[in-house]
Amino acid sequence: MIRKPVVIAGARPNFPKVAPVMHAFERCGIDAQLVHTGQHYDAAMSASFFDALDIPEPVANLEIGSGSHGEQTAGVMVAFEQWLDGHPEVDAVLVVGDVNSTVACGLVAAKAGIPLGHIEAGLRSFDRTMPEEINRVVVDSLATWLFTPSEDGDVNLSAEGVEPSRVFRVGNVMVDSLFRALPAAKQRPVLDEFGLTEGGFGLVTLHRPALVDDPMRLADMLATLCDVAERIPLAFPVHPRTRNMLEQLGVSLDGVDITLLDPQQYLDFLRLEASAAVVITDSGGVQEETTALGVPCLTVRENTERPITITLGTNVLVGFDHDRIVAAVDDALGQARTPAAVPLWDGRAAERIVQVLSGPLPSARFVPPSLDR
Image (cartoon, rainbow, N blue to C red):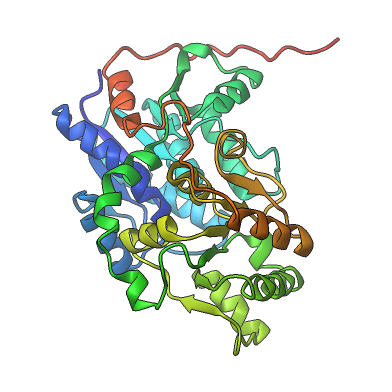
């Protein structure tokens, strides 16, 4: 049984994933510490996460900041290794998701011989051009405990030769946080602040490099959104990297029913998400949240590492094609909202994680994948 785990958060989307785990540790009397690598850091946004999710301030902020993938990963490794050297009591490291901090801290833990747990293990887009896919594969190969959110994660890990005793399907920690925060989110006045009506607008989030770092693709997507806005008003919280590209493109949305917003605090974003008639996104977490909420979701990507949101949820993969996106919006606007019943997405994933961590260490034996000869 572990007694002194450290939980890693590197980017804003990590906080809703670590929060329920920290709560579950506290309920079990386990003294877990939260370390923020500072991969993404905004004082106001971070404070809102701590308040909304009811988690304590991290015991350390490594203050890594932005940079290239190599700079960021190396910076986190050096800083986290130094922090671990000063905390010999740590007997487990837990990482979440697929950001650079996840793989960096996972490598440090593995090389230090500290048991490593990966929350959201087994997710695969099968697209190695995505930096996140590289991070997922590497961390899963190192982890002692692989906590999967759905059956497809188990299948992917089995195909890669992972010892079954290391794999634990626990459900979705993002959904844990959503269920906990939703009552408070529904009280937020954000709709009135931006002149939006319940079920009367679409919500847009775009941030992935494959879309926003390609000027022609981003310009085409904006043209598509302008056509969508003729059907329903759009609210668009703009990620900093997306805003930079919009400014470089010199885009004007005058006369178009698209409201550009600053990045929203967690509860305000949940309120927008739960109230939207349709969500257009390239985010992984939003695919999961909309599935839990029963909100139609259109994912503007060619692949997804969360296929369960398509097979059992409300998500449709639409790529970047104008006609396909517009047609999917028309279909979504005619749909009834039905929350999906994904197995184990019940708000208790973190409890299952802590229960597993309270038991013996699993085997680390590698099972080679079968080969057709």
